[in-house]
Image 1: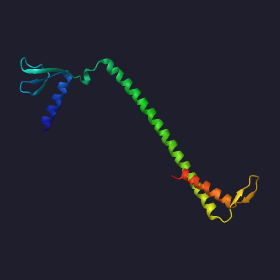
Image 2 (image 1 turned 135 degrees about the vertical axis):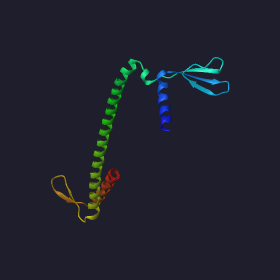
Image 3 (image 1 turned 90 degrees about the vertical axis):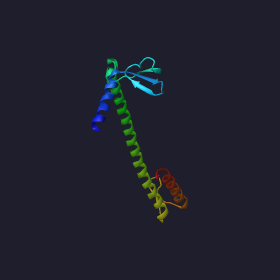
Image 4 (image 1 turned 45 degrees about the vertical axis):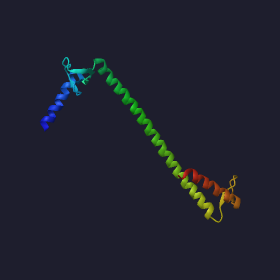
Length: 150
């Protein structure tokens, strides 16, 4: 079985090296493939297949292939670097949002649970929050939680 498969494989490689194949339909309607033109009077339709093997490429194509490959590799590296940069920025933003979420939850807990909340008055002193200031702090903390805690 292995010998048969190896023979078929080698035969298919040898056919690809020639580069000229013919396809025709005989009188019985059977499609035939060959590297030789069909015998006269046997084929009802004939078609010459233009199959190029890799070894039959012109020298110009071979010279341009490495340049194209190098360009594609350079473009790939640029895209990869941009994707990595975007991922790093996304992770940094997620880390900042996580920290802001923690701060907003702490602020909400302080305004809800502390009996006396002291706030800076802007002149270097401290004032105690009344109900309006406490509610304003709770609202701001809830808004921050909605924005940063996802």
